[in-house]
Image (cartoon, rainbow, N blue to C red):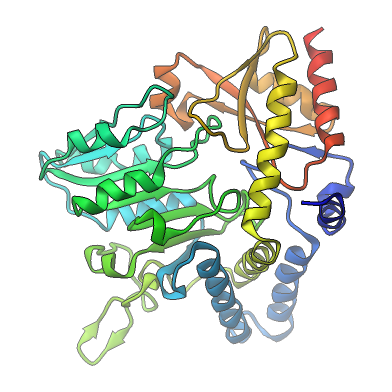
Amino acid sequence: MSPLDVQQLREATPGCQSGIVHFNHAGASLPSQATLDAIIEQLQHEARHGPMEAGEQGAVLVENARRAAGQLLNAPPSSIAFASSGSTAWSMAFQALGPWRPGERILVGRHEWGGNLASMELAVQAGARVEVIPCDATGAVCPVALEAMLDTKVKLIDLAWLPANGGLINPAQAIGEVARRHAIPYFIDAGQAVGQVPVDVQALQCDVLKSAGRKHLRGPRGTALLYVRPDFLAHLNPAQRDVFSAPWTADGFDLRNDARRFETSEASFALLAGLGNALQEINRLGIEQVWESVSQTSTRIRAALGQIPGISLHDLGSTHSGLIAFNLAGWDSFELKRRLGLKGINIGANGVAYTPLDMQARGLNSIARISVSPLNTDDDVEVLMKALGELND
């Protein structure tokens, strides 16, 4: 992206005018003014005309968002559902795979998100087993090792594509090829991928993919995307149903034949209006441009961190995302986050619970995390490095 492109993005984003240096886009990024306006406009419409009466306009905005999400993921709009969070979306799809039986196996990467592992507990209580796919020499999930694990008891392969605790980019497409060859359901947690890297669900060959709206998409909190491959929909039987997801017909209550079987009649049209605007913005900008910008900036940050004594980087894999996990000697990660916040610099910090299998395997109690966006400039990087250098003195 050119300096002019970045300047225009920043001018359209109130958070960039506030004096804050924001490097916590993997937690939640900064929305544009247009996204805020879309939310407020729908709320005003509901206030003036009645919340229920404004539903017709709200439904149009939701379908606009669905089309924009489909464009971003290379998916038909009918394969997209909206949820209140990425964890909720993933859990609904996972529970819809049931019932689970003794001896069934769930294969996960070592970097699995803690919330997904928590959702698997009901399956474990029913007798299923969660097993970890070995890593290759770089620390990424190994497709060859995965294939060697497969048998008729494997009911699900689940992958955290870009884990929350570092810069790893797992080989999601290669894992998908293995899953498809053996006709095993394949879920992708793309919470840190959608809006940061190009995502093509056809190439990934996944059956389910989820992502939050608040992260790299720059949408509002309380929104998330759920993709379900149309041919896989018949394998999913959601426990949560209402008059929207399972409308009354002459033959009784029938589940919808598209991804909306995971939605309900009650949704925030205002938030989804904001998400729709954010999706349209990233489609106009181009995800390839976004990824190139993120990659360049994060490469500069990694190089600069390497020049600060006491900094240890925790990257895995051969290529790296815009999530940079590190520790500074003598500092607790959460205290480091707090102290930088007092200087007007936002970063993230993660404990063991977020990615417990990987954190324990690497002996990490916590990590500080810088996460990058096209909104970040060289000046932002300089401010961050200066502050880290001062704290290290």
